[in-house]
Amino acid sequence: MFIHPAAALRALAVCVALAAASLSGHGVLAHDGHDHGAPPPASPVQAAPRAEARSSEFELVAVAAEAKLRLYLDQFATNAPVPAAGIEVETPDGPVAATAIGDGVYEMPAPWLARSRSHDLLATVTADGITDVLNLDLHLPAPLPAPSPASVLPASSEGPAWLANVRRHLTHQGPVGAAAGGFLLGLAVIMLLRARRALPAFTVLAITLTLLVGGAAFAHEGHGHGAEAAPPVQGAALTRPAELGLERARRLPDGAVFVPKSTQRLLALRTGVTGLAEHRRTVELPGRVIADPNASGVVQSSVGGRLAPPPGGFPNLGARIRRGDVLGTVTPPVQAVDQSDMRQTQGDLDQQIAITGRKVARYERLAATGAVAQTALEDARAELAGLKDRRAALDTIRRAPEELVAPVDGVIAERAAIAGQMAAPGTMVFRIVDPDRLYVEALSFVGLDTGAAATARLPDGRSLALTYRGAGLADRNQAVPVQFAITGPVESVRLGQFVTVLAPTGESANGLALPRSGVVRGEGGTMVYEHVSAERFEPRIVRVEPLDAEQVLIAGGLAPGRRVVVQGAELLDQVR
Image (tube, rainbow, N blue to C red):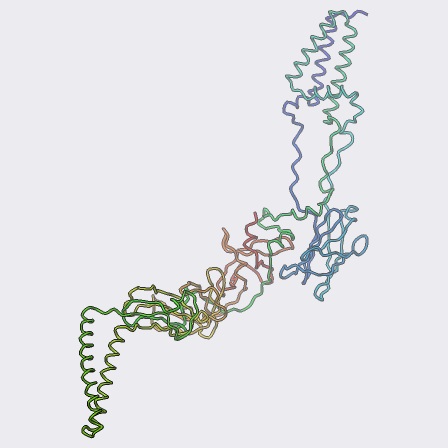
């Protein structure tokens, strides 16, 4: 049978046009950008499946892992971990006892997790003589629907491997590649026709084109380019136990903070239940630390002179001394005029001593014969003794220095002594303070309750207990000076250190007392974090007033009976 070349070419052109239409209808041109529809959205990072339960005593969180169940047991009011507790869980396989693996962390095998997506568990908790029953409703995430078998082309329908590779290569070409392939195919047809092999060439080209077009159409109808690995099913596999520690705290879109129990233990979060009560109103006063006037003293030089250390040297700062210890000496200087006068006086005294001495010797010889009365001899002896005393006192004034003696017991708080230094009269050389007896002096603009105890807050957050000692009658900068004695330990407290005194005014106010560590300063104002559920904390804007050095008074924004973070609030506020 003879086939005209022109007819064969026309038939081939029709086949190519039909193939192009078929390929374009099935989305081959979509490979220009390789766009086969919107990609599936990325699944958000979520925590492991969990359940929680609470009672008036305990709070329990169960986290599902692969064939295991991890339990976190805390006290409901304080959020403190409960160690050495007995936990027995009623599971689909019967009661199972949990084993302690950490501080308030327990674990138990759970092979029944893979059987169902919903589990109603009953946990019996026994700790510190208290037994409680908690109900845990655990729900596992549902798996995504599996792809339909019709959308995946079986591997056997692709034919030989080389043909599948050619088909896959051609179906992933753009318009330019398809045009180039058509041009080369046309050249091959012309060459075969000139060789008078029209029928075999036409047959081979038709079969090849049919296979390519059909395979490409079928492949793009289901977009099956071979047996590819199926994506993992979301929620099908539970989090492994080793991945439980990777759960991190994060701030939710509504402003609340999600903190897993494992992270709560790292941050040492503690809570307290607010209660409405009547408290004394206090006022904050600026103050500073001073020495107790009855337990402190200064060492001064009464005369001007040159300082000299004692045999053991000047005492160091902080050295403890006792009353009567010699801390140094002051040698007064002697001017040239004074030295001349003193030498003249010494000469006169020496002359009088010599004359009186000879007189005493003569009277002693005459008194033996009765020529001189005994009373005259005694008067001469007394005169001689007086002259010698005056001479010795004059030598002492010139040579003996003044001793600087400690007036009280205590430690050296200040020292201005340098060997050889000239000290003017009244110069303070040493300051002695008893570190166990210190005062705080504050300036008050309002009247205070003299019988109530006050507190002082140091810059580092520590507090001091104070006892009222008295108030002045003279104003100082339009305020009244008030003095308090520090009671209790006074470690690392220095003289002159500034403190904030919180003293009661005698008035009372109703409110919620909260530790200062639970209050944070944010962009919206002063706020606290309420523990609304086991792993959820919500910020609350509140209005506070000073109560004492350790607590503040919540005057508004928070209802009584709420669990509020009292430790770790600053760390919780940093979670983003």
